[in-house]
Picture 1 (tube, rainbow, N blue to C red):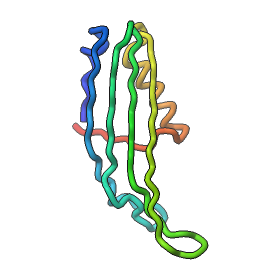
Picture 2: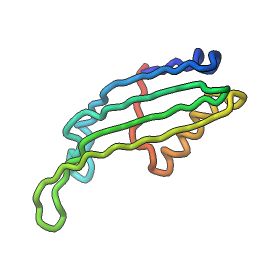
Picture 3: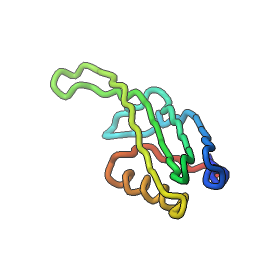
Length: 114
C-alpha cells in the first residue's frame, strides 16, 4: 500500500487520510496465533502552516491464555504514533521518526505492498 503525500507537502492546509485492514491472523507468537481479527490501520497526513504531521492509528484484538489459570482472554489494543516535521525536512524526516519509534516498540504494524 502506498500513501502518496507529495500533494500534502505542496499544499498548506491539505489533509489526506488512508484506512485499511491488515489480516495478520497467521502470525505465530510462541506457538499461539493471538491476532484473531484484522488490524485496523488509519494514516492521516496534514499540512498546517508548513508543519506536516503524519499520524498512524492501529487497533487490534490480542487473544492469549492466562499464564496462571489458562483461561483465554482478549484485550483490545490501540496504538497511535505521530511525527511532526517542518516542511524543509519533508517526508524523509517524518518517515525516519516513525522508523525510530518502530525500533523502540512503539509502532507495531508494518506492511509493504508492491
